[in-house]
Length: 494
Ligand code: FRU
Figure 1 (cartoon, rainbow, N blue to C red):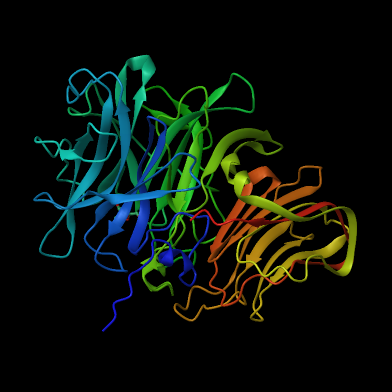
Figure 2: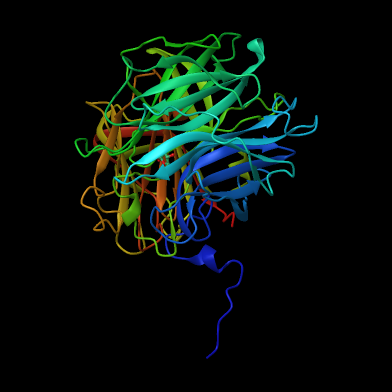
């Protein structure tokens, strides 16, 4: 029998394989973990089951990149041990060796949840440390694990840690039931409870998971606000499945106070952006705050129709706070590094769309970016239609009377694997007094829509048999004034 040896890039050609979104070479992945920048590398760890394509005993997978575009896959970083599986968590650079683990040098510390299965199928969850003295290539579990436990809480996980310079100590935000606990520590080893946030704030439609907390400048002013991101687990009562909310407020090193405690602000109005957190230790000269989410939804994640791998991450997105007519909002924009993959195919200005307008007819590409600036208010219904070579289509639209933008994936392709997958997902677009901008990124199994510079974002998985054939615009009842339209192919980053 001839055994065919896999060439290194074979996995890249697999059906539905994203070409410029991170996905594991094989097997199951969920949350991004431990994202940290150190010695010129962006590290990405992730919840990983190395022996199967569905969720199972959790490890930390690992990859590194110099630009968040091309990734090098590295061996598994953390494996389960006597304390249990390795659930989600974060990494920091311990610059001043506060932990004493690095002989006075700087090194990487991972702070994660150990989850140990107990008889009734539940997990006991405790926080632990591991450290690396060789740029994340090998890891040693801290001998005194766990470093934080609370037997009274069943759901107690996903530590995100950062250095709070004014108090010269570490801060941890941790999901506890359906709120967030905040702890502080001088050395990453001894932790003291500081406060809780969220018992009365935001949405409580499921258990809270994967919190993050960080400061951001408001617009380009000197004003600073703190942003708390919190994911909410899947609850069968709500059709959206798992999703992520955010709060804007103040943090004094101990207490986070939301400016609008009642308000529920969703990070993404599509179905497939979960457990997103931001990179640690991006140098000050760069100054960006960059988020990566798991591009899936617990409702159907285990049933997605890929074969040897399951799940991908969203595009890395730069976060900013901007003042809008409705108040300060969190904006997301794909990182500029992705621009290196773009090859413009067609560019048009001042197109008046009435009825149907076809731009590119013979694209035949699975990876695509469409950018447009449009005033659609003189038509009732404006659409960007992306038909595939297989007779499928993904439709992105805007309805003037409700001011809602949507992605409709009901005709995009394979959707029989779960009854809740097919559908149309919409979001209200607040008026700006200016034409609306769309940036649409299509990869082999996803579409991401950034409206008005990323004030409103929708991320949806799609599983088309064909690749995108062309780009069509339609305007019903009236016309849509498209002042800019640009179509680019995106080169594979694999
Ligand atoms: C979120 C999550 C985390 C947990 C991990 C387990 O998707 O449920 O709360 O740490 O996944 O894989």
